[in-house]
Image (cartoon, rainbow, N blue to C red):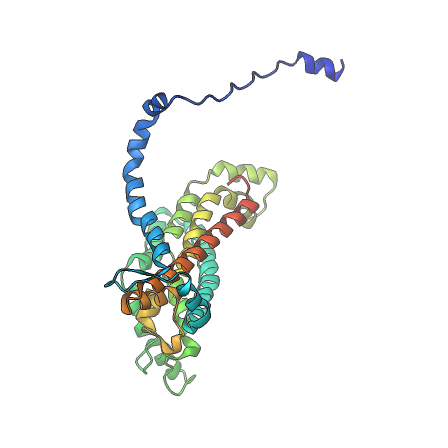
Length: 319
């Protein structure tokens, strides 16, 4: 029997009905409960996120000192920032160092720690998760590092190095430009196991174990192959969420540098864009210029977010 005859005998699927726009009254009756339920969130989101972003964009084109009415200056703040403000470029360089070192490193570290902890017994898993997550939510937890990297002989690191004969006098870890950024990166990595880490733990707990059995039948030979072919594709949404959080938090480093290296740090060696914005907004009260810095930082974070999603979309188009 020819293929044309077979095709003719095959029943055709009914065509989908054409979409018809419902009258507004009918549509509102069907969906108003959903709108009422989402209204509180949308109200809060608009009030505390959308409106501040729009206000910052408008204020970035003004000269505003919190006392007088904003004075429109056009692109003056942006020209000053990119052409005349040398400290801004130091802050950009330091922020990029944080973003491209602590961001990917903390993301890979969170993924590997989550994968390791997921294999532990239940009680030990809960304890280890708490130990790793706690620094990210404990206010001022980084102050322990002021003792570890103290610049006198009583500092933990200096004490060890001097007792072992490796150095003859204390190193000023938190004020010397040669060591400051390295210390800040270490502390930031220690504090970066936050919500992204928990999301990865949750995603690993929800992976269907039948997938591992099917993979074993298909020929996976070790845990690394299970990780690559089963685990990572199964937790792709959590990986995107964690990546966005880890990279975004690396752009927003401020408290660690301010509390460990001081404000301002030696020759601005630990200065970041957020600290630069804080300097102009909360110290000098040049709110228009601070708003321009905030807009640039927002654009950088939004661009990075889009890049992360694009990369994950290329790797796994289904997510």
